[in-house]
Image (cartoon, rainbow, N blue to C red):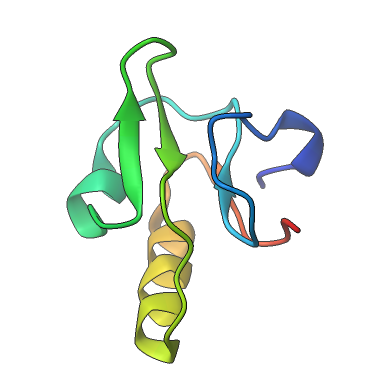
Length: 77
């Protein structure tokens, strides 16, 4: 499970984030490229835009559930 203490600083502020347990598998970027991007410098994914609409939120929640390493947190501020 992703933790706020391991949240990567490259994430935009908000509820969803990627933490340092990310293994750069590309799954989140493939499923939701409008919300996730690879940081070439760190080799991790990061949240580049927070979802707003119910449909967007549902998509990012599904991506978080599908994350093999549970690196996408949903409890950010």
